[in-house]
Image (cartoon, rainbow, N blue to C red; front, side):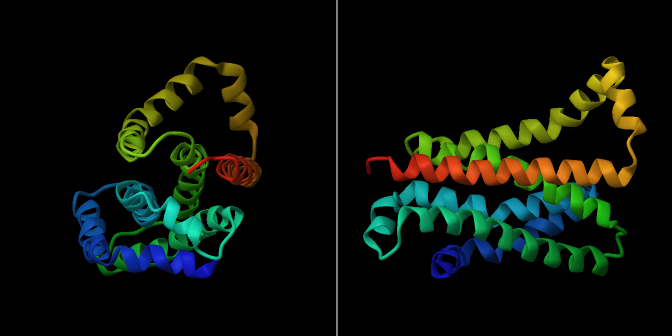
Length: 201
């Protein structure tokens, strides 16, 4: 199964050459560190899906000695491994540029990445290849742009929820968010496995 994870990196050799410049661009543009960490985390997993969409590798993957369950597991485990590696590289680059960041920025980026992945990974197995990657990319950019204003609006106008969240300690809020996101990611993993095992290629 881990050979499948390694395969994504091998197939993306050319794209990996632009990974550092890609992250550097966000740093130079003075993007928030959390956004930079998030974009870096998304780079490899979603490029892998884009590559598979273009060459339709599902038939090839299913001809290998791996079960469909293992193929999906490699996607979800691989995404977490690439996220950790991307955050490590991005942290080093931010340090070299002398840009301060906090563990909170990393935690927020990790949670957002896992949440976004939980909702989008199943789409690659529900819909036919061709346009899914474009739709997911546009959705991500829209959410990154309009997400924070929507949250602020809801917090300002739904006073009961806002008061409840404000009264929570920071630790409880982070722990609660982490538990919910891990649950959603695990549920997404199970749903995607179920879909893929019953999908006709």
